[in-house]
Length: 400
Image 1 (cartoon, helix red, strand yellow):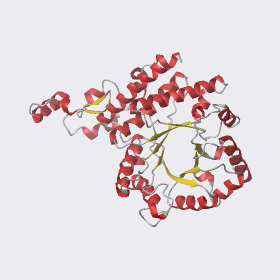
Image 2: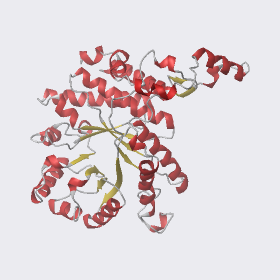
Image 3: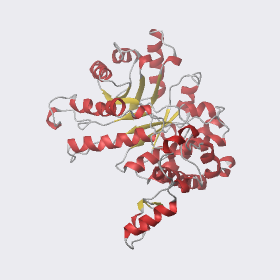
Image 4: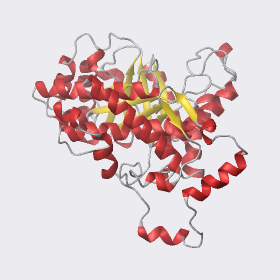
């Protein structure tokens, strides 16, 4: 991977995604006098009464240090962070545990009626074609995206895909009409790439994502970002050795992240991940298509107050959609609390309803899906995104 090692993050990605203000918007600021960085610093120095501005720096983790003061003059030295997106739409997800397909069908239909369009089926066991028919009874797969995770390690994704194909054929639905994903990491599986090669064979044109690379929650933010793109690059490299070109392998890959409580850090993390993967794709001379990033809120702990968890997941969700995640799952306050005694309410749909309504509020009340890149132009977030991406890229290059 000499090409990857040779790429300098600042010299390639940042100029390529320059999103500085367009000329036709400059009139919005013409009525306000420009204030130089020097003038701002003089005012800050006076207000601090002898204290150093550096004392107010934020150090969220080792090697990352952000000043509370950010100015346009600093950003002009590099560029604004962005990815040339033309929209900020995200899919509304909900977890659906599948023990009994008929019972899960009732749950997913309730979720879809509540506005969900990307259910994630958490499978307890392998599903046959007949069980898939029961699961999708009364549901049109082409109207939603369909996602599967595996709660048991003995579930074979190849068998599931074959059964899903049988179900689609019986309902006259082509593979090109559906979208979805498997929460499946082939490099972490004992059989390595053999099942994945089987999945890709003849299915290159389907928009289905067969590979999900999840961030390691045990690592710091920078190390986790570097680890994600390293695993993605390894996956693309190994498939290329098997004759599958990078444009195909990368198109069937998505990244999954677990959201934390540091609001600005989470925004910057998602933006940095997007830029880092675009940088990797440049080394393969692949069209720079932004990766699919799936965000999951933190899971409530037994000692958590349920209402506190609602507030936490709401702020986490804001950071996810501002950062540009394409799909979002919010764990309800009673997530996986199957028996009524462990729930904080007698209504089993209360927690999921509140969780999905958070996303409705972000779309229908806050209109965050109508702003292409809500964080673009925020000098503070731009600086933090750049620091995360630059440091993660350096770690990645050391390991390639």
